[in-house]
Image 1 (cartoon, rainbow, N blue to C red):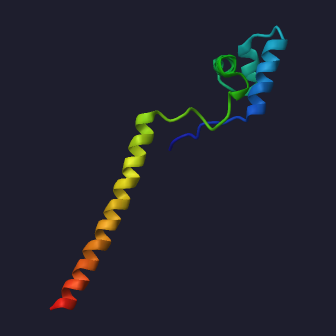
Image 2: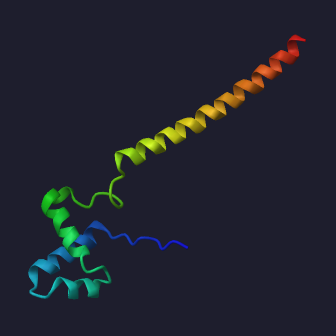
Length: 99
């Protein structure tokens, strides 16, 4: 069974970063108190420093272009297969009517 990945709100992340910057306590101690991985605070800090106010917008990391393209192609393939089945059934129906 897969363990669900924990998700945190933008407010939680910003507050954790604020605590980390305002105190002289080690990040590992703060992380332990917040029940998060030790390096997670540094990752959030890096994201915030790089993106500023636009950091922490969505759920998780963005999908890679190849993954999203694969998903789109799989959906299109499924739709086309369904359309093909409909056309086959219609062709059989009209072929019987012509006999």
